[in-house]
Image (cartoon, rainbow, N blue to C red):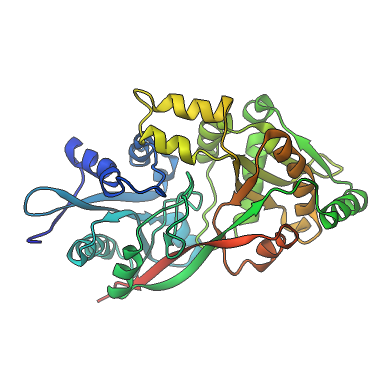
Length: 380
């Protein structure tokens, strides 16, 4: 298709091309769920993204010889993660490209070169700055609707990566369930025993308690502790925790956010769930203005979708394997029924996290939407 030029996105026009390219690539794709343009721009703004205090990030855009934007990518170096895991990895994220191997190669070459210049020895992705960012390239189930927290991409994307010598590092999968009318007997029995044996109780926090009462920080400190051993994880800083609380807690119906406390009032488990915004985001076209806000507000406050998103589940290491997860199911299944949710889907879970995946068996889950983190050595 002629010469491909990849440039660091610095100007207003280049960043606009970076942000808006997916809207053109996925026009007419019924499975694609866009991000809000403003959220993408905020990722690159140190005033709004606390992760940039310990990470470097550089967006790139690719143009053909007609000056048309045909691809984008971002290079990311998370210095905290590299120090924690003893690696020298440059990550790539936000990757999008037309079905042309010259384009995908030029984009990945740009990040490889950028990382190599900064002393990195291998590249991995798609990943974000932080583990709660979108990560993993979809490698199956391209016909299923995406979500607000996951990457959707065409089937040719992994083909391009593998042709360029990228190999699998880890896979994530998602669990989907139909919400039963009643709590399965196994969950009810285990929940009862867990409460009696360990003095645990389910509590629902108010938004005021979360935002102003210090409980939001306790929740995210638990997430840091529980997720610490997982692939690529680097702990949230205090500023990041404050940003998450400010930006996302107001979106969540606190009835769908059970926390588990022990007999000393210590939070030992949390399940962060909310109604899906997939259709609302599709209607918004990735923009809050002029009318995107209406679709999101409607889905949040008035007429929600019939699917719940089980975003994050964390249990204190001292209580893992002791039935705490049954308390979540025992609480959430009646709540989902009362609110009219007919199905639920987890966020991506590591395929080798057997304990986490096995807990869903009584609900007859569907496991799919496999996503892959690719890696490649970049030393010469």
